[in-house]
Length: 237
Image (cartoon, rainbow, N blue to C red; front, side, top):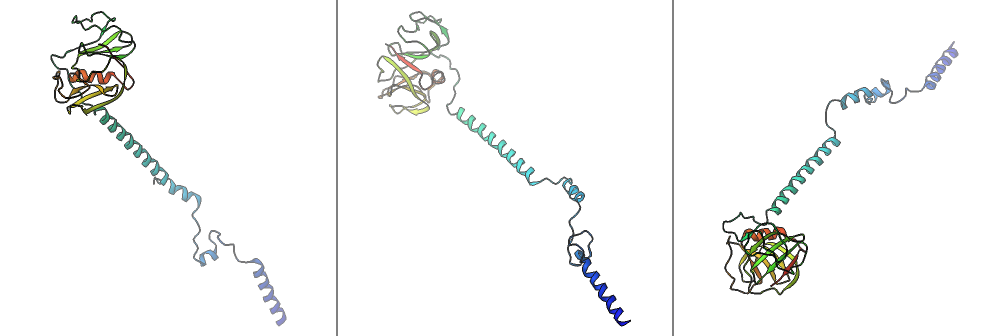
C-alpha cells in the first residue's frame, strides 16, 4: 500500500509538469495577474479613444502651416503697397503747360493750335522727344500718337541732338545744382528729366551746372510713368 501511494504522488507530479504553466500575456491569466502585468485594452476601446474628438499632432501642424501662409501673403501685400507709394503723386494744377493725347503727323499742329507740332525727323515708335530750342517734350506712343506734350525748362548743359535711351529712374534725387528733385528719368549719362520737389508749377531757369530738364511736377510724373529703362529718347533742335 505504501508503494502504491508513492507512485500515485509521482504520477500526479509528472502530469502537472507536462501540462506546464499557463501562457504569458493571455487575457485573465492567473500568472499575469500574479506578476502585476495589465493586458492591453481590446481594439474597440482604442477606437473609442480616437473618436473622442481630441485633435492629433498632424492636424495641429497643418493648421500652423496654414496660419503662417496667410501671414506671409499679408506681409507681401503690405510691401507691395509700400513700393507703389515710393514716388509721391501730385494732383493736376491750374495753369499747367501740358496738353493731352492727340494724333498728329510730323510737321502738323496738335489740337491745341499752339504750334506744339511733333518735330520732323524725330524717330519712330514709342519714344520721348525733346527739343531744347522749343523748350518742349512730347511723349509719343506707337507711330505718331502724342500721349502728352509739355513745356519744360532746359538745363544749363544741353544734350546734343541724337538718339538715346532711358538708363535709370528714381522717385527722388539731388540735381547737379544741389536742388532736390522728383520723378528723375535719366538718359545719355549726364542728362535727365525731373521736377523741383517743393514747386508745383514750372521752375525758374537753373543757375547751377546741371543737365536736368525741369518741368511741372504733374508733367514730370506723367513722363516718369510713361517711360521705362530702355525707352527711346530723341533730342532734336
